[in-house]
Amino acid sequence: MVSLYFKHILLKLGLDEERIETLEMKGGIVEDEFEGLRYLRFKDSAKGLRRGTVVFNESDIVLGFPHIKRVVHLRNGVKRVFKSKPFYVEEKVDGYNVRVAKIGEKILALTRGGFVCPFTTERIGDFINEQFFRDYPDLVLCGEMAGPESPYLVEGPPYVEEDIQFFLFDIQEKRTGRSLPVGERLKLAEEYGIQSVEVFGLYSYEKIDELYELIERLSREGREGIVMKSPDMKKIVKYVTPYANVNDIKIGSRIFFDLPHGYFMQRIKRLAFYIAEKRIRGEDFDDYAKALGKALLQPFVESIWDVAAGEMIAEIFTVRVKRIETAYKMISHFERMGLNIHIDDIEELGNGYWKITFKRVYDDATKEIRELWNGHTF
Ligand code: ATP
Image (cartoon, rainbow, N blue to C red; front, side):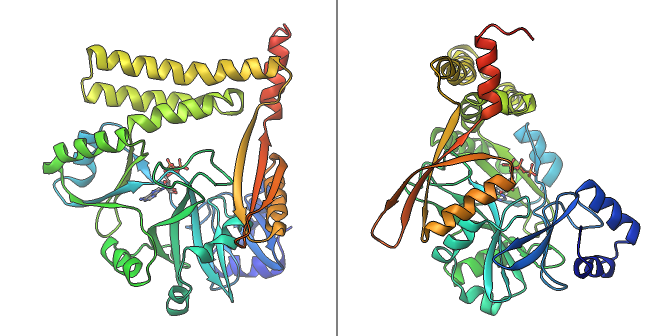
């Protein structure tokens, strides 16, 4: 049940009693708690409050991070969205989305789904100058946490060699969720020394050939893609490299049974559009065909062999925390998300950090493979 305190705030925000009740019943709004601080998390969107919105009190409302539309045909997508107007092109960093805001005296990191993430909240001070929030308490820093030591993703971008880093890509106002124009965001990032995603510059449809070259380079370098933004942040679209499409399939096929079929279909579709748009033929086509087939099959077959040998399907993660307690808080956070996690190893690094290795076990995928291997019919 949502408390009267939050109900009162929602009424003030313009939601009526009936809407609040339906949301509550459907589990679209959920009350949660982090270190004694209560908050309301929106699992569904309602009346301008986007999915992932977090309400702490009447003024501390952090809107959900908006969905970014995707183009799959680069040339035609750019033309349709931006016409002949200029747009910024920046890197789409492969990590997990966080919104960072100061609530009372605490700086909190929120996940896309609207949870306070205990791990990111503990580490965020390593990456963000606190002075920013003293000067701008009503702004929210949105960025990607990326690197090989992430609690949510098995891989990071190639240039983060260890640990994890924060890359700023948006600054939004509390309550309205409005984004600052790109120029202002870049100025603030520089002023406060906050690391930003790489900005490749201003492009326009006339420079489409340079954009193609950029995609080729990012793909060769094993990077995920680009996000294109009009300077006023009103138009935003993303495009991913063929590398990322194949690599996501490779990562996903190990846990084939745990992912919706759409996960694979969407990436195959994007790759097909890339190949068609670039009119890739002959040997180059064969290379993509082989890479895709291998990405789909190899990890999948290996996971079947693992289960046949009595193992569980699992992914291993390593993270650095300042207090062991944070690792345990992460475990309960994962449990609330319905995941099965086991800590494998805890090692003191001696520099104020602990290295925690944990395993995410995929019970359903393991069970399904085991039954099929043992001859069960379906
Ligand atoms: P969506 O709701 O946009 O479909 P998704 O979970 O499917 O989200 P992606 O397809 O990976 O996510 O793309 C959007 C995400 O990319 C953003 O939510 C953000 O976390 C991440 N991202 C990385 N770099 C940038 C950037 N430069 N600008 C905006 N978002 C970025």
